[in-house]
Image 1 (cartoon, rainbow, N blue to C red):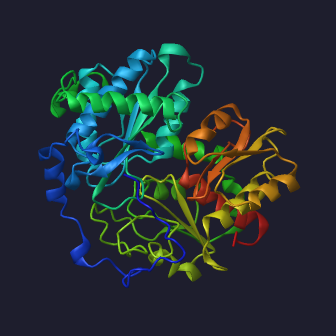
Image 2 (image 1 turned 90 degrees about the vertical axis):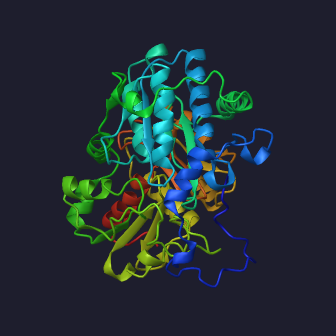
Length: 443
């Protein structure tokens, strides 16, 4: 289930948009999780079938569109896909802070363990951003081919409301799966639902966690240590900027203090609260709670603090999208910041290939086309969906891929691939680098 986050220009805004979430809109976490296990989807109802959009399958346990059966069926379909395509390396499994992500992780583990899949899990209590999973896949696969390759699963509905859950698959190239892959997984998963999960293998969660095939992987340490290959922290540190970040209660909540400590940055985390109700949020334009860093209504907590920082930023719940707040303009429109980022990167990354192109989705601003012409760079105009950029980023043919919904990833400073899925953390920190090097914020 996809949630529309940007209103029609003529849409009427909710009277409480931008205000703190009142108690009556908060979810009952216990009831939501109970529905996850107790409610059985009707495979004859289209709204309750597995449906992969541009970012995996999403839905809510309360309406029968994201329940335990969905996760069991999808995970078995992924195990089948791995066997069919000779993928026998480990599977990197990550999850965000939504209420349904924890039970869905355990459900997925039950199936993965029963199928003998080597699973790489974050240490207990540590959440996993989407870009950290993408990086882990790519780092593992470096120098490996064929059956040895790894892939991954991220359990997240992205910026969707707290009642929702989500499940997406990243194949060995580390980015979002293409339509051929998701179509096959979707069909197989729905077949398992039709046959009442017959053919789905599973172990109970306690046994699954105790199996020798379940391993701990420190995503945070790996990601933070490698981040200096993407962002110039020396120039940021030398500028003495005051930086702020709001993780919006998402999967990167522990990453920001680690980044600040390792790279000695004056970075203030305005809140490190993790609450599956997301009660700390201000309401989005339509009165929903939605962790959308590109929404002025949802970002009110950080924009009110704009004068405290030279530049500030936020990420959505799985930290694949970014929001940039400057003193000069407040919350930047995504297309505005992406245009600035494109122009800056292709002027300040001498290690990138001379023929590296600029990737954007067709609905992203035409300003990037003019920037590409001015820079003498080829433009790759892709349909909606970040999956179109994964091959180019992997090969270094694309310097950057971006989409209008505040999602982007770009190469390491030496021109090697960084992540092939969107990276809100790197995109956010780039705003600090731009401010430090140019002497003015991106606004």
